[in-house]
Image (cartoon, rainbow, N blue to C red; front, side):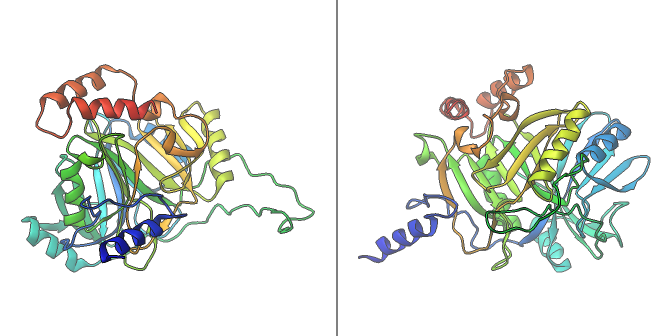
Length: 384
């Protein structure tokens, strides 16, 4: 067998019974950069603006965040794990997503990144960043502000919501005791990932791989258009042999440019379910759930906050080391979950709102990667 065939067989073997049945074909995107500027260590926090911080705090507590710091103009939210805050919400005229902040592994990475991009290293302005820190502010090809930060100290851990002891077959961990999970907010542990929509998917993907050293876990492509390249990527940080979340960032091609959802880890399925009942009792809207994803394998439940931002509770996600190559799969609604209710129009963003119609018109007229064939392929994927 030739060396090429051996390599192809190795790729296929690497995906059997793991995260995807398919690997890359010859000449397809490798899913990583040969010589990135730096390698970020994690997603640090997400930045938003909202006009009503009081209302934002009420939802945040109901969803399961703890308040790390609050000023007249800023609300910093955190999980129970030690580390950085999860979310910062600043007072603004409208409700909008600003961008993500990634954590640099070392302070020297900021200097390297600053030199490579012509950007300054400046102080982090954050009431909930213990000991302060440094940051480099960038702009990705989609137009999202991206901050790379290094903070000298970490927030201390908070008390955990303990997983319930479960009985499995002959493994009896609980006897002479009932199971009564309390009806309370899911206790957020940490920020997991953010999902973004972009009209310039290929350029944005390469920027995150080349600039921040991230690597792809899974690619999705449109049925009949694989030769045109992927239209979605689940992207993780590269910590070598240390396993990390299946994705800290996911991006997909679309007619708009913006925030899709963000995801926050909780303890277990009972935490997801009882936290969901708590949110439902308080009148919040479930977008989709409960179920288990395919890419990433997470147990999930999606909700809308009062400003219509989508947030996800998740548990039991996949962890990948650098060794695993990207998987490839067709993009489809049925491929979003192993089990659970059908994905809703709200989750898919397929409702023909005036803003969505404007997005489509602008995308088809603009200098980007959207065209009629791509748009038709995305519509078919949403209905498949």
